[in-house]
Length: 410
Image 1 (cartoon, helix red, strand yellow):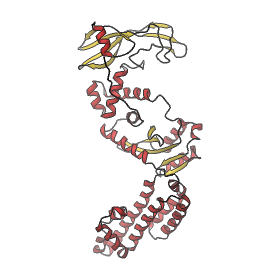
Image 2 (cartoon, one colour):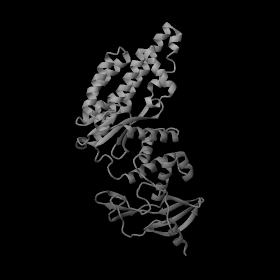
Image 3 (cartoon, rainbow, N blue to C red):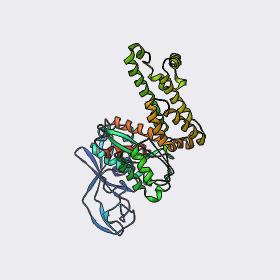
């Protein structure tokens, strides 16, 4: 078997002819050319008339036995009536600006999904920033379709990607469970950029928007998609009530401490029993809550308010739940517990968006789960220097792109 034939089989790249090879600075440089004679535009892939020939270029390919491999070819330029004067298409690389073969970039993308970028730089012997540019091309190659097309139910949430309150706004598609859009910042202007990218026609198709109780996101959603129903995440709504219970506990402890240290000590250690679900309580914790009914009526009242609120959200009939919630708001306002009076006013203001959870059983759980994955990515990388690098990795790992290591047969 001729050496050029063996090299062609080892490369495994279709429509590629090996003309020769040489060893340069410890690397194997394989001289190749496309098998077709007529030049093709690298952008529209159509046959176009030639323009001129450029100097030799090299593309980094996957290593053979630990030896760096480069493909060398002097590409021609074509005069395309729709794309202008561009470099011709070559079978080993999809992007005319790239100096890496498609197989090399796919392998880099697969490893970047599994480990941190620093490990990728060591394995493939490329720069840290080069990994980011390769990931951008891999994402573009595998997300050819518009991710914003066909949106109906979306969720929005923010995630911290660096210290000093640096955030990203992430929008996810509840129907596919994938992140579809990300941008630096977490204010109303950042979220408004998403709807501007979506366009007026596609904004009209949005039906449900899940979110936490962020004023910036609420304001923007009501402005750009007024027909959509905002659904507050149940966890964040119940957290308001749980925070009111904890605040009431602290107030009671401070009040009793002024009277007697022994009286204040009686409610020590009640934080978790008050916040736990009843079925998760231990026998000792259940006994303490039973004694609380006669020992501290204010704190026991706060506990009953919390449990009754949770039972309202467990209901399946929206009209009944709304009626019960209005009764709960009246009870909270008359409870003489300042924390619950404040919480009741907030719930009254957003009662329709809270009841929307009962009607649609729609939460922000998908967005929160994807946020956990994003936090894992940032932790794995020990932080990112820029929002762009973070977004690049998010689009690679959280948008449904599935990559496999390049494997070929002779």
